[in-house]
Length: 80
Image (tube, rainbow, N blue to C red; front, side):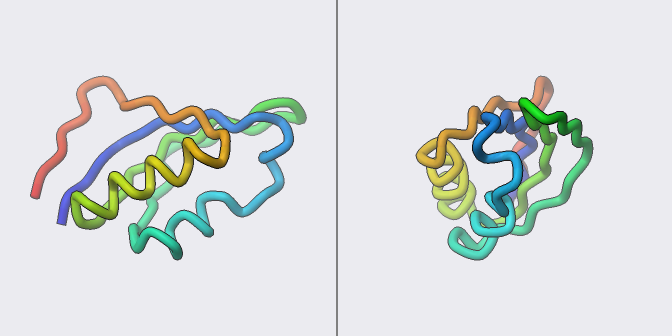
């Protein structure tokens, strides 16, 4: 299993959608919320994702396709 830490920035229209839940089910990764800040106009979530390398790549692609901005956390270390 590999781990990856990312910061997600959600546009306003996705704030109330279960995007993280759907991503975890469809891509078979386990999310762990490390920090979150949500306002009426933007949502920012720092997640630690755990899963196979392939599933982590699929999860990031899923989020980006939905319109979520995905940024790596500075100092991110991916381990197997």
